[in-house]
Image (cartoon, rainbow, N blue to C red; front, top):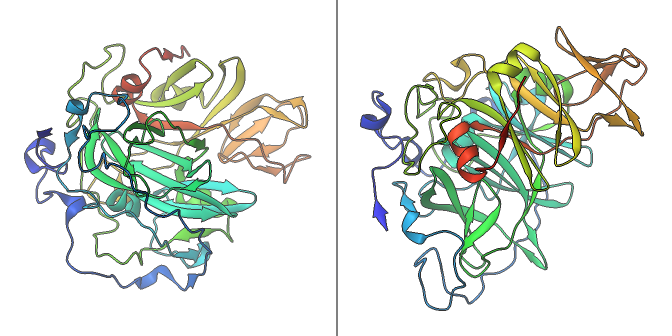
Length: 397
């Protein structure tokens, strides 16, 4: 297995005083400060460790199924397994108490069965994985700074309830997770076990959006926000990769051939369907704001709302340039097809004149209180989307 420099490297990222940022640790706990009072959240117990060969310890161990990727293509990202610690016992605060967030700061947004959660990227950058339970459903929320992707999964697999940690390895510059039950290795990008006992198994993906704190707060004033009381000391609010999303810089620890149809670190919205995948340039969405397309024969509407900062631009997560927030939805409600147009501060359907926010909530008009069905999508860099889905189409707008 190849050993390369840790991500966060000063030399490769061309930044000052940021060396192996996500591994930095100066104590065992942190004062939650202005996070507010914690809200108790019941967590589903994970399954016990199984007596299986560990792909985490040895990806070529005897007795393991044939891997889906070449183990020699795994790169050491710097920290050892769990050197970037997953959050296994997440604490939450009410949205009104989360005063540590800037208005345009990005958060990861999930809603299941009416329960809304926000996971600030200022925390996710330093932990990358949260094992959580939402509305009784065990969920893993993952974020990979190097490929600028946030993806959530249902962590149930048959009778197992898995939980995940960081392996310390990368594949195609993307986070490689491992499950603690069998120590199989999983692709963060696809939710598939690629090496180990569970090779070939896939997790169900859960729709999740990256939106600004202010947009999420407006939609979810009583929602829950991941607290900075994580049990670890980290420089929450600071970006250990400033300048990393410069489109002219090459991706870090990516050894494959980049797809030359777009610049490697062009921001795209990726949507995958049955035997189909499509990428939309974020720059094009900034112009159009609303795009209707089909993916795998399924009509979807794609929105972009300005006002969300890049988490990978400036030293402070909330200080990055505006890269917008995207939403992808089924454009039907109660069997009725809707068409949408942009408006200041959101969107409008032309059939009823109802107004909508970037999270798919009708905020005014005859349909107020309604919700569109979200479609799983990934805001990411082009090199990563094309590496995992090389047959992807690029939308022409």
